Image (cartoon, rainbow, N blue to C red):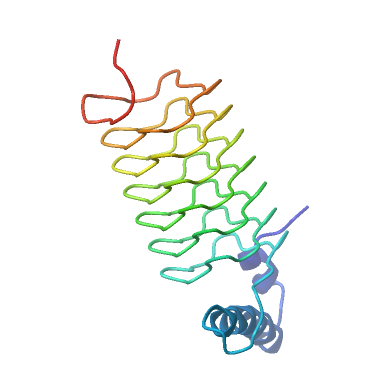
Length: 185
């Protein structure tokens, strides 16, 4: 069974906890250095279990988080633009106001995630599961939602102009006159 970081830390001594947290900080610090061209290296947290962690306002632009477990993680205001999130688990994640421009979220689990006011311009969400996700006020313009499941999602005030909704499941999705780019029947 894949344990979340909180469960993992509960099984460690204080010294071991410090070591795990130091390693995460080092990866993020190296990524910051890489982003500004001062050495460092691009963050590769693929297949890493970061569930239930607090990454508010982190800069993970261009990072590799493919297959990562970010369920129940607080990513409020985080910069995830152009980030590889293919197959990641973001279920129940807090992504309010997050920057996901150009991110690859194909085959991602976003069930019940909170993306109020998030910027997803040009993001790739092919076959993503957004069941019950709150996307109110989010900018999804020019986003690829082909084959995505948006059933029971809140799209009030969302901008879907120029978005590919081919084969997208919108059953039960909450759409009103403030939703841009979707024709109401």
